[in-house]
Image (cartoon, rainbow, N blue to C red):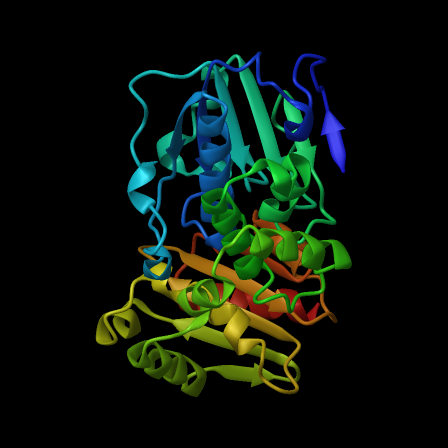
Length: 317
């Protein structure tokens, strides 16, 4: 775990009385996944339980499948005033908060960066970064201690861990991950209901996945999947609804690497997944993105066809 510039009056959560924090704003990255949503809501809940007036911010858009969580708590626009402290949760880089909040960093007296990405830029006054953690939610649960949270916070953290490990199936899962998950379940959460909310797919989504697979290209152990704007319109699917598609495709036999390309206006969003043979985190960094060794993403300012050609060349070098 990397902890830098930690003030003496700001112990880790489990030890803290939070006397140095009067008000707090909590940020997570744009186009949030389950870990970003679960972790940021958990920090909001923890702050509130200590009597600290807090707000949570995210540019969005939010995947529909997380609508069982209180997404109405999120502020999506620039705050009119700033709290004294800010938490940046699951953000490897301040740029990940999106264009709406890109200039907020210097507005806070204290910036606390909590993350599990190996390429984290350590942009906070306090940086709590552990690349060995399966998720930011696991990291927060380990810091806080599950004895010190209520059932609602436990649910938020479980959502983060479950979603980011794709049902405890990724290589980042450790015995500690299972131990923390079990203590969260012991708080009384309904783990079966949460699994259903996160992973069960409506039939129209499965039909969309089938069409993406039908139009994919495979070269050796790499599959290239293209999601055009036209395809999303045909199936009434938004970009945030495609979260989880790359992980789903990684279940294909004889496939090591998934490259998912999603068409935007003048650019292409890339998602990479690997079952272990390729370091897709390093690949993403070639395109100005980032993430983990086996799961990462980036955006290329090119159309989908051009982006596909560029990525193929990078994977064959």
